Image (cartoon, rainbow, N blue to C red; front, side):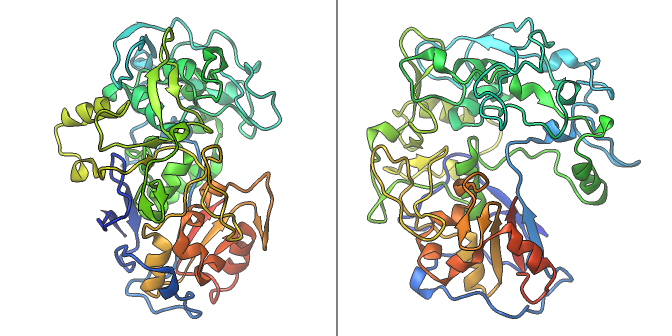
Length: 449
């Protein structure tokens, strides 16, 4: 397999927000190129001869779990090495604090005037804030999680000391501006503080107490030393793992799935051309007056677009200034087109699962249909068969409890949703049928359980 940046410039097409999206694809797949809906053909019905012994590529995409969260105590085979919490001495094999535990301590900070990715930091937390439930299934939402103590040591803690591996737990903050702050210029010591002060954002922007209070959640990890994540451990023992990769884009599910499927960031469009979104949908991470880091306009049903070419836009300059300090040149200098507003978090897709266009508007929080090239149109143009299998898709319907629309990112695409390619978007049940029949299993599969 070859790994490369699959970003190309095309007039009138959105470009990435900040960091390049790096993907690994089989060498038989050609580079992404623009394809119009009317020229897209249905996938080939018969398998093609391959240049290499690789006949099928299946990409399984998980959600909201980082490497150290799952592989914190993973021990590789003799002669191999891994960079994780155990190997670095942050935790011991039993999941308790290791000799370098203090290096993972979380600190407090103050941002009362203007958003910063490297704010002045103060004292370390005496103990971690008690983890919250957020929106975990079968638990009271946005409440302190009584399974966990209120005096956890300030550093990584083993989740399964308090809750079973199969039990639902709270969800860590994963939004664009929040994650830039959490990294704190590489020190990674503000995960807890950002989770407490800003959280994932809220529609009640006038009420700082409505934060989701996700401060302690991000420091939890599972322990393979205790039998957690057995299937992931089996995969790691038999295949390659990436211990130096986090995610494609700083931010949430939606932006990352767009990057996965296109190599681009979604852009606000009107008539297929870049336009200015409603003010209610533009991010402003500057703190509200009288608060410490309570963002002015941010939240899952609030601001999510950023004009990253404009250094006067809130939050843009501090990120660009930080990138300028790096010892290497940022890919294509950040790639932001003037006048374009990019989606950095989660908005619903422009089409429903069945191809019905969604209603747009200032209170709809829906991304206009996108015209950027994507992996589906590129594969079709190269006559390579593909499918995107999503959990919750059941035949021609969906299970609303299980289906994640923003994890089905080709429903953003006009070229896919208005052509025969829409039939390539199927459910996981179809995957299991296709695995039993090599005639129907495509050359390339994306699986979102």
